Length: 310
Image (cartoon, one colour):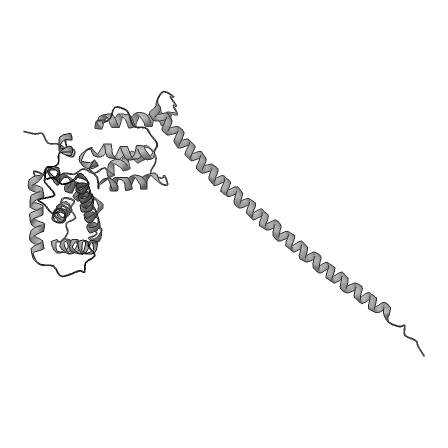
């Protein structure tokens, strides 16, 4: 009897290399493309149905798992995608209506193929229910999916990166993009979240990968303790390289801001000087015009004959 676990089901190397689709002579490139297309449909449908990101991410993980135990030759990407999203919406406690899901998928597929939107038949509901049943059957009713979003937020708080301009947003985007790949069926959520943060934070990964969850937590804790203590051990490449690159980027950003500010100050100063020079020139011209006018009046007065009294 297998023991219960709250961790995600991870595939073995043999399962990754010899998928059921490969056994049915489906090219690897075509299989990857169909997987990405199915995940794109799930994400787009979830957005149109206003489902939470947790439901869409769970559906994509279930979709990826299913086609590692079933062949693309025997099951439709459309039907399994609908079934995965419908099942994930119930697992995530955000259920959607079957009718709405079928209509949205019909709209997405017809739009993708460049065809006009036509009324649906009632048979679409049967296909969705059968697809949901097949997913439960093939996965052995194991639909537990732990996502790395919460772990990533906690790691960002520990590293004091929640207020950074780019790292939280990019890390979140990497997690969403990874749903189109087999990352979530190969690694545990803690590893996925840490990998993306380490990549953005310029920390070199340890050489003894893959790490267990406890080893990964110890590694991050050790790094955080060193960072707070201000220890720069040159022998610790994992810490020093990240710190140096990070400090260098901060200094460059600060230098760019200072240069931009100095440039703006110089421009303002030059504008003021130009304005002052222009005013001086205008004052000089007005003064010269006034002097010329006075000289003309003096000459006119001198040229008149004196008045003679009788």
